[in-house]
Amino acid sequence: MDFGKKIQLLRKNHNISQENLALLLKINRNYLSRIETGKSEPTLSIIKGIADFFKVDVASLMDINTNKGSDSEKIRIITEECKHLLSSDLDFLIRMISVMKEEYVKKDTK
Image: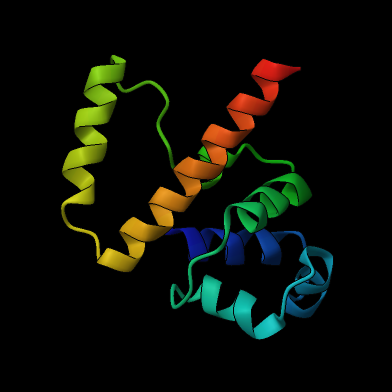
């Protein structure tokens, strides 16, 4: 199931409207609608906000299988999967990785 459909299903299962979820996430309802239909990509902070609100793990929300072998195998899979993405999607992934790296640096300095 793609990310947008999963958000829509979670929202409906929790009986929350797009308007209310958008208010909680501090985003525009139209933007949430575009995320649910796959027309827009959410930021990492929105993904985290959705995961926190529905009390789900970000990895499971994004269908990330954390048991796919060694780190080198994971990097190979990521590289292979990224070959088919649009440039804008690659830019989004680079931003996500940069944010994740910053979070690790913050944790290491504490």
